[in-house]
Structure formats: C-alpha cells, structure tokens
Image 1: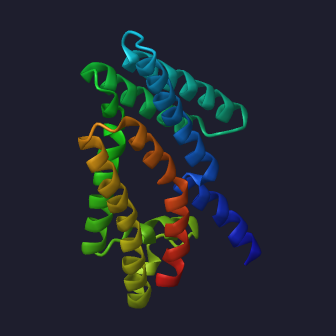
Image 2: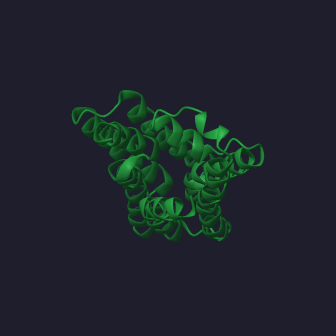
Image 3: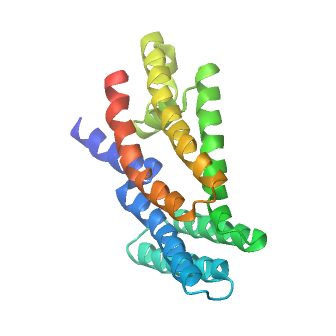
Length: 202
C-alpha cells in the first residue's frame, strides 16, 4: 500500500503541475505586469515591448532553473513556449491585455473538455487518477466509482468557469494590472481548493 502511494504522488503532482510549477507559471506574469506598469508610467516608448521582453526573459530564467533542478525538459519547454506565445500575441496586437488571451482560451477549452468528458462518461478526473494509481480504465466498470468521478469532475469544470468569470470582464475593461493579480491569485490556490473538494465529492 505504501509503495503504491509513493509511486502515485509524483504522477499526480506532475499532472496537476504542483505548487512549484504553478508558482513558476506566475512569475513571468508578474514580470510582464510590473514591466508594463513601470514603462507606461514612465512614458517609455512601446511599453508592451518592454513587458513582453521582461516576461520572456524571466520565463527563460525560470526554465533554466527548473532544468538545473531536474525538471522534465518537455514540460519546461512547453511552459516557456506558452510565455513566448502570449508575449508575441501582445506584441502583434499592441495591446498588453492580449498577453492573457492564451490563458483565457486555455481555460475555456479546458472547461469544455472536462464537461464533454463527463457527458460521454469518460470523466477526465477518472482518467488522471486511474493512470496515476495504475488502474487505467478499470474504474469504468464500477458504476458507483464512475458516478463519483463524474461528480468530482464537475468541481474541476467549476474552477475554469470561475477563472473565466473573473478574467473576461477584466479583459473587456482592459485592466492589465487587475488581470495579472487575478491570474496569480487564481492559479495554485484554486487548484488546491479543487483537490480538497474533489475527494469528499468522490
């Protein structure tokens, strides 16, 4: 039993990104907002360029640190790629608020994917936990467990909808700083809350 738990924990942490991964993901966002705020207040030319450059630079530093600490290269590169794409979108449109488009679209797609998985009776939480625990898809043969995974998966749909409910009005209002704060606050704490709520529901 103990060996199974020990084997499961790294896999689950990897799937959820872990607290360290969530913190790493917010650092470039903080850098972007801080650089944009300083550049805009100082009337520097092209504050979006400064902000995008700061985000990519900090993202690269975070990537190097994670690699040195033994992080998986693929996960590290995907994280850096996400920051670079977000920065490029903002640079292309010239609107700092568009830096958050990738995150908004990602949350909308995730909410849809999780909801569809529940409807078709392949709840993603079951797939994630089943893989981590080595059950594969055997849990689908247990009607009670299947229903439990379906109910618990709605908790995860809820986290994406909460983010969208906060992000979209701020995006429409062009509130760059508020979006940066919301993006930071609604990352790991919200995931931790979902983990805490999922097991009682399951």
